[in-house]
Image (cartoon, rainbow, N blue to C red; front, side, top):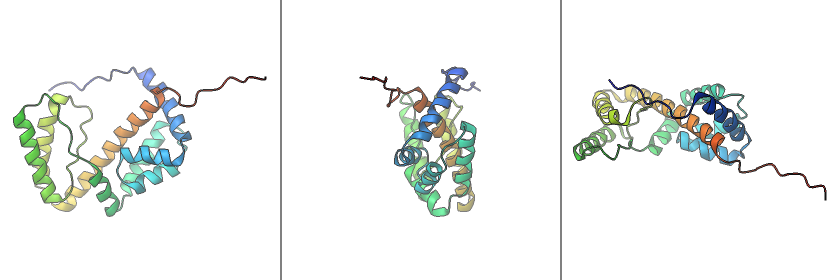
Length: 186
């Protein structure tokens, strides 16, 4: 088994980026925050709720709020979030046969459950993605619709957490869109 992919950003740099990024996220206009959150989870109700509860004092509180909002998704909200998802991308070096097998597996899943297959692949190397996705689809095709809806919701929560961490990190590492202006008393 391959070891998880190491994060190329040091823990101290990541911590600083999270702190700075969270401060920026908390200060964004509500519509900008909602749009960014909608990219993290495709439910507009979820994104509105998350944006409305700002400011978040730290990343852990933001992630806990994301989990809570995810658990509170009504079936139509979950359906909206699942509809916004697309099939996971394969590493471009994957063999053509892998692409064909995944395409067929995704089609069978969507035909059975009426929405895209979602899975969080955090911590896995790209070379493991194809096998993991194929194995998961095969297993999950045997689920009844209610069981699969619960599992898909859990995967959506895991994906949203990862997207939020990326959002906050990128916001903290990006150049300041509003740099401080030096005071000129003239």
